[in-house]
Image 1 (cartoon, rainbow, N blue to C red):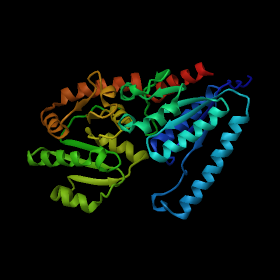
Image 2: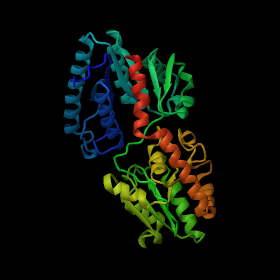
Image 3: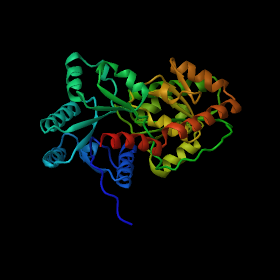
Amino acid sequence: MEPKSKRKVCVRIFGPLPPPVHGVSLLVEAFVGYCNENSIDVRVCRTSPKRLHLKHRNSIIESFGLLCLMVRLIFEAFRICVTRRRDVVCIYLATLRVALVRDLLIVLVFRVFRKQVYIYLHGTELSLKNRLYRRVIKFIIGDNVIIYVSDGLQQEHEWLDCIEERVVPNGVNEFCNFNYVRKEMECLNLLFFSNVFKEKGIEEFIDVVLELERRGVDFRARICGSLLGGYSHEYFEKRLGGILRTGKVCVEGHTSGQQKSEVFEWADVLLFPSYRESFGNVIVEGMSAGVLVISSRTTSSPFILSEGSGFVVEDFVNEAVEILESIEDLERLGVVTSAYERYQKMFTEKKYFDNLGAVLMKKG
């Protein structure tokens, strides 16, 4: 059997991809495999060092890493520009100031050589930026193809007035092999799964836990995520007091791989009080694992948790406590069943890649 010939579409993924254990990197890695299987020429071009640790920030090591990275990006841009093949360049458009300059420079180079640019819009809060920032974003996007990760983001960025757009719901990576398990709640197992800083809603999570304790609700809680933004174990000891010392609440730090699977299998309810999200893959992971999700009305949560697949609340602390106090096993089972069905319909990795691949094939 003769090997498939490569399609005349060349995908270059530019973005500040996290370390390999991070979900986004695993998703990109899986997408590269999808492209190879479907004869799409693909290459990943990192715009941030692959293994740079936070302790090296603002150090000589970081400066050297960034210099090497810049040399590689310049070489890759030159290689793309001199080829005669039609190219589709994929950029993860971010909101950070440095990332904005990076994206602008990349687009300028490719426009000089009349290359088509394919923008994967995965940032939030763009519409809240000042007028100059908006104009730069509009220039970067221009008349290129835009891919939104959800209808929620499409509504967020209506001011872009783009000529062409697609809506491709984001997919959840399945590296943890989550299994849908029907659970009966003896006590409430509550999960906070995110990097720990204020915008992720950690204070709201703590307030929910304290209110449930005050009302005498039987629960256990786990906080899984890297402690950032000044948060520390000492802070949680001060805020949570006795319920932390007795083990009713556990602060566990970053969790991944098999340990992550075990955490989601343990959980009954995922509390997601975040008000700073680009999509909210953790919500989808909860849906795939048979975990009830209660989310704040953040960027994409109304879109993800539609069709009765979870709870989206305005006043997170009060409404979440009321739901947790009153929900019965049978009602909860109905919600998580709907959530799992919606996950299978909309958010599997294969569904996401099929949607994204269809756009690439059409443009190629």
